Length: 141
View 1 (cartoon, rainbow, N blue to C red):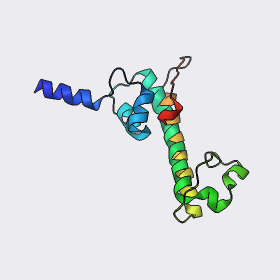
View 2 (view 1 turned 120 degrees about the vertical axis):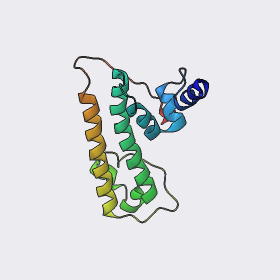
View 3 (view 1 turned 180 degrees about the vertical axis):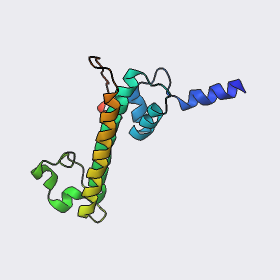
View 4 (view 1 turned 45 degrees about the vertical axis):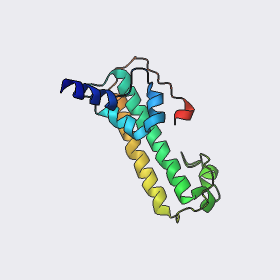
């Protein structure tokens, strides 16, 4: 029974050789964030990563909405013209976008607000004066 439990835990956890960036690349931001948040006592570096992944997840969802709705195509790249956070980032054209509505933008910014609050809450638990870093390879995103 112990061998089965150990094998399950080994499969459920990233390998020691796998970096957080590689885990994000293999599994995605949301599953990596969920794994980090499920730790009973995350290390300070993991708390820092939790804050960062809340931020990155927010960017990811905004860009996905932009592509799904063809927001750039529908609005003539208004996100860039108005300097709207996240919505000014370029995405490839969607050949068959979903209908675009202003409610979608409201939903995205409500989600961004919640994600930023979660990021701030995680980062606020870190002791002052500590230095942290997290290297994420762009291709893993």
